[in-house]
Image (tube, rainbow, N blue to C red; front, side, top):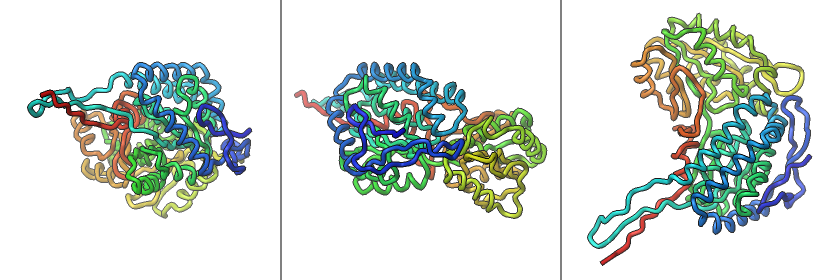
Length: 467
C-alpha cells in the first residue's frame, strides 16, 4: 500500500518518485509506503488552500457548523476504519483507540462546530464624538499545520477543527510514520467542504519546513518536540508568521504524605503508562514526600510489574524512539536504582517493559529530559517549598498534578506550579471545553476550548463617521 497526498479535493501522487517506508511498530516490519512531497507539491497544496479561502472565509458560522457536524458524524460512522489505520501505524490497543481517541476526536469536532457560532467580542460604541467603532473577528488565511505521531487522528482534529470553524483553510502535514488517518480524515471531510479547504501532504522535516517558509502560509501550528518547535519558530520569524506551538512536556506529579498510597499509585501508573508513556502530559516524573517515599515506591513497583507491554499498552512508535528510551536507561547514573523493567520487552517490535527508577537527582538527564516511554522516575522531597522547586525545576511547563487530601495545600500548590494545566488527585483527563497548552519550552498557544478558536482569528477595528 502507498499513502497518497490529498490536495484540492482529490488523492494525488507526489511530483517525485521518492517514498517513505511505513513500519508496523509491533513487528518492526515495513508494511507500506507514503509519498514524499517536494516543493512543487507544497506549492500546489497551498495554492489550492488559497483559492478555497476566498470561498470559505465568506461562509457563515452556521454553514461552518453544519460542515463540521457532518464531518463528525462521518468519522463516527467510520470509526472502525479509522481505528484500523491508526493501529496499523502505531501498534496501539485497538479498543482504546475506539473508546477514547476516536470518541474524543468526534467530540472536538462537535465542540468547534458549536464554537463557530459563538464568537464573542467587544460591543460597538462611540468612543469619540461622531464616530462609531466596532471590532471584527476575521479568519487569518491559509494555515500550515504539523501533527505528531503519538495521536495522529486526535491531534489532527485538534488542529483542523478550530481553523476551519473560524473560516481558515488548511494544509496539514502528518508525522511521516503515521500519515493514514490524516488522509482518511481529509477524504471524509471533502464531501462537506469546498475543494482545497483541507489538504494533506505526506512528507518529512523538509516538507514541513517548506510549508512554514512558503509566502502563502499565514499561520503555522505544530505539535511536536521542543526542537521541532524552535525550528518552526525560527523559520516562521523570518516572515513574521503567526505560530502556535504545542511542544514537549515533562510533567511532575507531586505526591504528599497524606494520600491513600494504593489509590494514588494506581493513578500515577495510569498517567505514566497510557499510550506507552508517549504523551506530552505523561506522568513520568514522580516527586514523593519523604514520609511515604519508600512505601510509595514499593507500591509503584508492584503495580508497574503487573503491567505488560503489548497487553496493557502498545509499542514505542519507531526504532528511533525505542533507541532513545533505551539510551536514557543505559546512561543512568550510578545512584539511580531500577526497581522494575528497564529493558526491551519481547523479541520483535519496539516494546519496552514498564519501568520504575528511584534514587534520582534533579540534574540527572532522565529527570530533565522528556522520556516519552513507559518509564517512571521517582525523587523525594521534604518541605512543600522543596517539592514545588523540584517540580518547577525543568525547562518544560505543560502539565502537572498535586496529590493530597489537604484542600488548602492543593489550592496553594496549584498556584505555585508553573504549568499550563494542574490536576488535583488525578492526572491526564482533557475535555474539549478547557484549554490545553503550556509555558516555557512547552511552547505557547492553546489547543481545545474557545481559546484555541480565538487564536485562529485576527482582530480588526472598523470606525465609521456619522456626522
